[in-house]
Image (cartoon, rainbow, N blue to C red; front, side):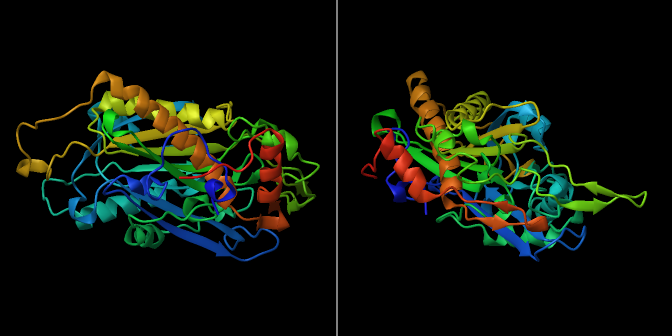
Length: 388
């Protein structure tokens, strides 16, 4: 289930055939989802509510071919590894992965191993993977380190150019968004032919926001579906843990709104690195339209890449000179608007697709109720609209 299945249309732009980041030719997405156990938290045993998601900019046969890329930080209480080289060189050299906060290292190392195994070029002897994270410790045994290298390899093998699973999948399995169940969401826009006909796709791992901040196409849904209607998983539930001194202590939860969001923007437009950075920045505007604030304890980090220029193999086999293309100035406003709309709709799709999940200590992250969402939209004059 997605926003458009409920008649909720974000913006005026036209989505691609799948309304997903994979509408950008050559881009694929794969997930590994880990769900195991119920009941009280036992560190190292579960319950497990986590996973890993990978976004591959090129098909497998072009694994080592770079793409131009740029990045942006709205607030930096988070991690997206490898960005210093993206900023320095303007190049993304392989897949992007997203997982939970305490699994970044193992996922990064697994991507290095995958690059070494798959890169036919002997000159490509190093790797600086891009791996992002958001915190799923409200629902998941995050200190149990349940994501392992084989799960990364499974996600890479599962990466496909077709429809993208959303909600409680991959890295988004245990995530919370605006105090509802969150997770993975995606959307796309296709520019008119007069503006080049380029495609822009966005994928988010949404784990951010307070309830009262949530807006859907400008409608204050979070205020209408308040905590008295759907409780928040952040409210203290009475669970206790053993203290090292032999006493008992309450488990302290981070405050609502303290989570993070990672956004990956892809386009087939022939953009240079500085232009990719501008698209990454616009993802923040789309997320803000859905109610994010980039708060003090939130990690809001975005990366954009463009596949419209081709480089061929790297290393000594690469041409000495590349003939690169760019776009006219007038195309940037449509590209910016496409990014903003796709990012906003990706967040809403994550919320609509997510299902209620019970995690550690019986803590519940409830799904955004579809009936209340539709009724709230209609009450503000935004009843179901024809979808494309």
